[in-house]
Amino acid sequence: MTLIKDLNPFNPGSGGSPPYLAGRENEQGRLMKILAEMSAGRSPGADMVMYGPRGMGKTVLLNWLEIEAKKASTKDNPIRTSWTTPNKLTSPTDLWSYLLSQDWKKRLKPDELTAGLGALSATWESKGAANQVLENTLVNECKKSPLIFLMDEAHTMDAGLCNGLLNLSQEIRREAPFLLVLAGTPGLRHFLSTVNASFIERSNKIGIGRLDAQATADAIVKPLNEHGIKIDDNTLAPVVEDSQHYPYFIQLWGEALWDLAKEKELQKLTSQEVTAAKTRVDSVRLDFYGERKDKLDDLGLLPAAIAIAKVFQDTETTTRDVLKKVIADNLPVDSLTTQSVNEHLRTFIRHDFVWRSPQMTLYEPGIPSLMTYILD
Image (cartoon, rainbow, N blue to C red):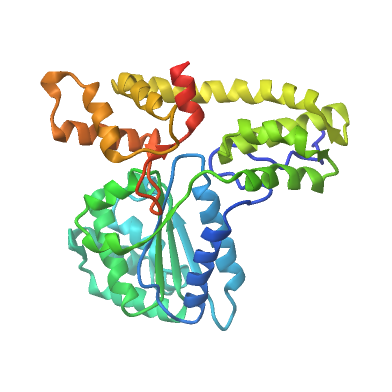
């Protein structure tokens, strides 16, 4: 089998890095500022909470931060990063295994390491880490080498472990450079509010939403141009509009346009290729929409979802009160309570149907075209 040397640079999927990271300059700037502080031995004042609908590029930004931290790390001023997801954490022992450095673990005999970490299960309390020896060890390690601990899909974390980690982070940051970065879907905010760590309200929050039109265009055009494929502004305009500025759809479009250019050996794309590419994009996108719709239907939320979609036909944003009223109007009378309305709204947020970024007081669709699909 012969390998294709000229591989498609676009990478639609779960967490795949795009060939050009466009439109995240503000988020990158905030993260670089914190990284600079840690490089200087200063601990961040708060944890970082990064959230947004699926497919917006949260994992991409975590990857980017990890790479930048490694670039900033030097022999005289090392910075350590550790990355995990909740499915790899079944106990406090697993968590500490990611927090403590490999060098520290190598200095211990296997039985000493097992005994030290194993004792955690009995000493971990709901308010945090009660094992003072390991806590002091982590403080000393962070003084020598600041640690950035990256947790993706944090909204699925065990509540007890999350509470312990948040309290531990607060303790470590008081004495040494340590940054906890939690990334997840819009439901992450509510999840964190349930784990009894009130100081999380003062965390640094970054909302990862859709790009603007120029960033969307750059994300498609620059990788194409780098490989000798041109597309003029008029031909590109319907692509930018159809993508909804949604990073996952942007990558789908880039992939389809690239493949057509290579198949036809073209150096410039025309409206004919855009039409053909849309057919390919739609084939993936419709399945994506269908799965989202079926999930809402399984949860009994489709009538309310249709009503919410109708609201967004006339506006790009709306208030929490409007959403709650629409949900209440579509609940059975015998189950209509303030609690049930709030829980249904949280479910819509958990499933990315609507969300609110930390920079806004109003709610917006996770993906506007999904609402159009449900209405159609």
